[in-house]
Image (cartoon, rainbow, N blue to C red; front, top):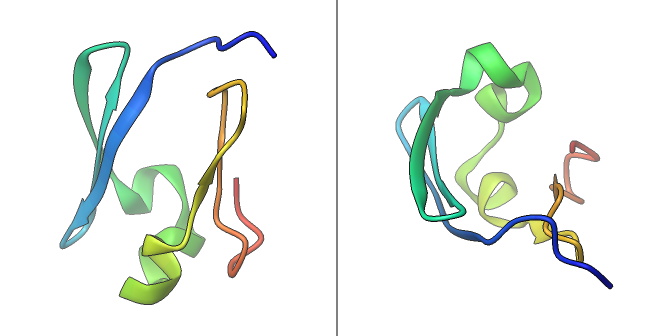
Length: 65
């Protein structure tokens, strides 16, 4: 399968998501990208899967993409 992006270093700190995509470090406020992630527990946030194409991230405990 073709990879669309290089995704790494996904982590949460307080109310933000930090992610490295194609070598670029990005930060997103959770309440701006997903109310579900914003309200999720640390365990729910840390349980994620990067799609084989690296085009998306899925949190199975939350059923959130």
